[in-house]
Length: 263
Image 1 (cartoon, rainbow, N blue to C red):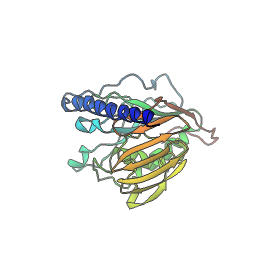
Image 2 (image 1 turned 90 degrees about the vertical axis):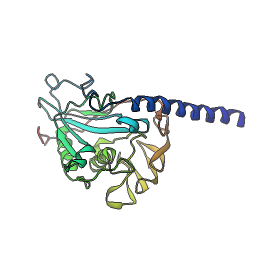
Image 3 (image 1 turned 180 degrees about the vertical axis):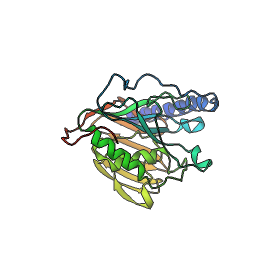
Image 4 (image 1 turned 45 degrees about the horizontal axis):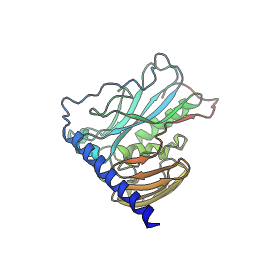
């Protein structure tokens, strides 16, 4: 058995180190003053798509942080709305005495300081308007509106995970490299997993265990995630993220007779 396990172990280690080196080189070459925030064209055009939409995005974080993790955000569009509303936590706002939660009409598929985003989850159709209202309420209830720490949290991924736990209809499986997602609210040790399909134990986002239908099984060591997803086969590793199909999850909402456009 050792003849099989050892090469796999070496492959994982060398791949991780090589990937980290490449990402580090990209990160240190970044300049926030010239970095692009242009839309990438992967979001639906709200002038053409009338139905309600909720999308969750991730992109490699800026500078050296991108070698280890991602920045995540949530964008929503009520029925017949002509633009998206984007919810995210932005760290530099705290340095200027501003609330860290940003609610704006930033294009949902904008680059994050040059980094190209990808879609984690896409929900649309009847019933989504009601869920959008819950997203807005969850963003307003974020318990760390004036706090930001890159590691172990609270940060942008702590915010996205908070919204996900408050809105279980999203069934959101955050990337394993979304460092800060396991930083629980108000010093809690136990909570629902972000997807709402499982439970987790976490000590200040530094050590914990998670098991959920959407996430699989995850071990958190110093904010770094190791795990396996048996239902959507993948291995989860620090730096490299999810090794397996990167699948955008499209979820039609349950029909709601009381759904109304707007927040």
